[in-house]
Length: 99
Image (cartoon, rainbow, N blue to C red):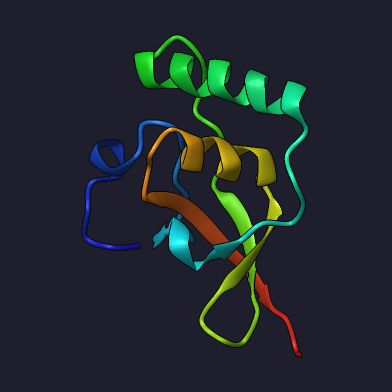
């Protein structure tokens, strides 16, 4: 985890001992988002930012071996963050893929 205060970095995520803050530019989407799920993600993230909905767990990613990471859990949240103009997310690196 970086030295940043996670509450200041992102009001959307719970953190764990394995969480790190990562630039969204390093993340590769798993798939295109479902529009209905994306709408729900926006609503939940807005509520989490306001403190009226629980924060979600970190986005799960796997390393691709080239400095980028594929989103394996939290693809819709990733897309919502991009649409909201965010530049970072709290993630957990789950494993390294062997290309």
